[in-house]
Length: 254
Ligand SMILES: Nc1ncnc2c1ncn2[C@@H]1O[C@H](COP(=O)(O)OP(=O)(O)O)[C@@H](O)[C@H]1O
Ligand SMILES: [Mg+2]
Image 1 (tube, rainbow, N blue to C red):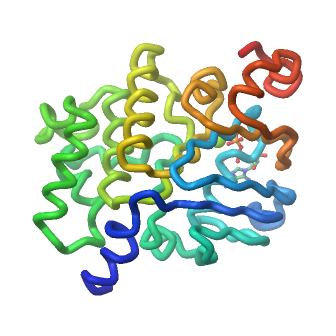
Image 2 (image 1 turned 135 degrees about the vertical axis):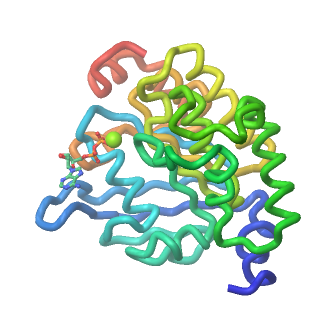
């Protein structure tokens, strides 16, 4: 891909874009059907939380959105369909996926991991500037830039995973359970940073979380997924306010 085309597709138009439309999405693994017709919209620059119990299909939904698994139905970003089953092509369209368990490369240093996030980009000055931008959000990564990712704390590894995703200048950021296994204080810091990134870069964010309280704290809208179907949608404030709904759908108090 040429430099000019790339900057058209990601950097230049990236700001303020990232309108996601999902229509009647069915997806699964071989014969195992997991999603049974999921439809949702996420506005440009919004944060959308996907909540729901274990096994509901939240991870599968993100995998279908980023092209890791084949889906049936329509997924459009800024009006044009995302390529099916081609994670590379989806990434080039400006979708960055931070998977469950982070997926950082443990033997590589912090800086090497960040550079991998920009592997498709050739403009070294821009990549360097973005590295500084990431260090601005996550100063601890700058302090540890020569350290192996495997030697970082869980929270720092999650920051690195998000930082690496930012290196592709995404217009849509997909986060899968970023709070998993982290101490409450670290999680609050992390969610605060995700909110800053969303506000400053206008990156659209879809965040899957078991920690409903936290996710609803930063999200504008939320959907509850149960057995592969959306059973409840609304503004985060509405869902947060409805305790009965929260108890019956989420199984615990928000
Ligand atoms: N690689 C896979 N192969 C087959 N089934 C899978 C695979 N990954 C997940 N599943 C199944 O899909 C369903 C939804 O899982 P998942 O999307 O991981 O749920 P959640 O993220 O909401 O906990 C579960 O029944 C799970 O067992
Ligand atoms: Mg999951």
